[in-house]
Image (cartoon, rainbow, N blue to C red):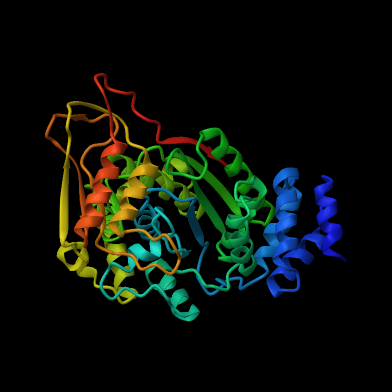
Length: 434
């Protein structure tokens, strides 16, 4: 089998076989296929597309290119949740404890943030002592003992995806439905859970900008997951403005804790309860999605979820007292208040701009090797639909650097647009694909 023939076949719009796809995935992973040939194939795929069968073969080949987690040592049905990325999205830290309190096992492998999208691992590391790197036995024991564990994703999970994605990034071939689907699902399938609930974001702060594009991606990922024998569902949710009020690392952990105390912002509370509700249903601890929501809501307001969060933090060497003493989190030397120059209703607050402003504070990273400032970020005081008086607080910027805080504040101010009339309330959940 020759790589040149595979490139030519896809260039001409023909479907690739399982064997051909396994050949180029394995060859590129072991270095026998050079970058220039893989780049040529990616461009052919970009223009000619992959069908769903080819996408499934590619997903399976990339999954099998690295380690595949064996979670058979965990009792009961394992449920995973994955978000396609957003600004202020700290739902994992709320959803997992709510599910664990219902008896659902959540064994989650998460990544670090790159750009303005925060990584769950970075957020968890803002808890003093918290360990995000556990050996397999301890990971499984933690899930069995407290119902959940969140660790950093192994570098050997879906090894081919890391190499292929890096090449896609520099060859302008990222934006392709088959390649996106296989990239996300290869890692999720390799993580070993029985059921997967996806949160597919759409809007300015998401990769998919419209509900229609997000729906297409959701349908593809759900179908690929089902072909692999997994129970699947995908929520299509709004990311036109940030989720919740906090954007950062320790800032988002604090908001997650406040939400588990029943005092969180309306949007993050609603989305977390509904995601957890579906996970509880998928984990067979509820007879219906609606019953799952009721269980999740009960666990939120009776303190069961918060108790599980504390158990989980302690099990991974973190200080559980952070739930009562926020001063234990990393702080920031510079606190900059951004006040409004005019009065009116907030009409627009693009999540992408807020995310980039947060990145400027030091809360995000431009390159994988960059360090993040765990105490930096933004807390919003006003969002779309809120009325603001001139001189009233819009948001607060936190950073270790005066220069970074000022730059972030200047960008943040450009995100706010105002109107004399109150805008319609944005829809938070557009659809559930099952």
